[in-house]
Image (cartoon, rainbow, N blue to C red; front, top):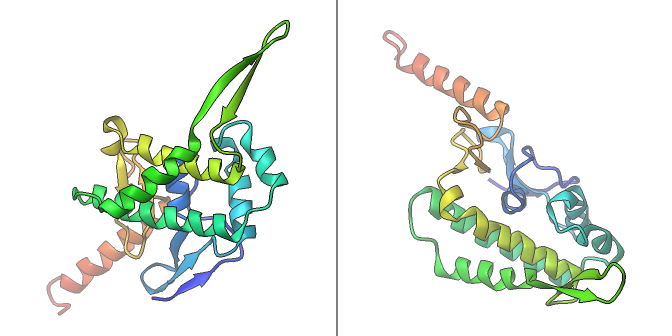
Length: 206
């Protein structure tokens, strides 16, 4: 199965936590006979992706991200984080111990999200957030990594799922007791596959 670039950063599923949104920018288009799509092959696609998820970043970030161009180095770092997150999540859903190298990548980037609040004189006083790094793209990278850390805390980790539909590689949070698939499309695909298997094994069909 070959990986193909995609003209749009829009993945088939949205509304997931920020870390899963990043992981889900690689997906399979077309099910079992489809091809693997990478929706973040360029810096422009990463910039567009960040814009689409502006509401999931700190309030101060989106406007600054638009003003400062994403560099190839930052793009590589986001892809590195995405790979580490996918490896970690796959281990989690399989009830295995995540790879130490993947955790090191996530933890290393998470530190970029650090900030503090400062009070300046005024009437009323002015409260300003100060980040530990100046590059807004590194801050955004850190916020995605930190979101993954929150996602894997005890109260949420049990709700993280890998979509079981044939040919799907997306992750989602089981936000409803009856949710079993990342999307209705995958649910339909799984039911069709199950029906086809039942037909092949029915008496007289062998």
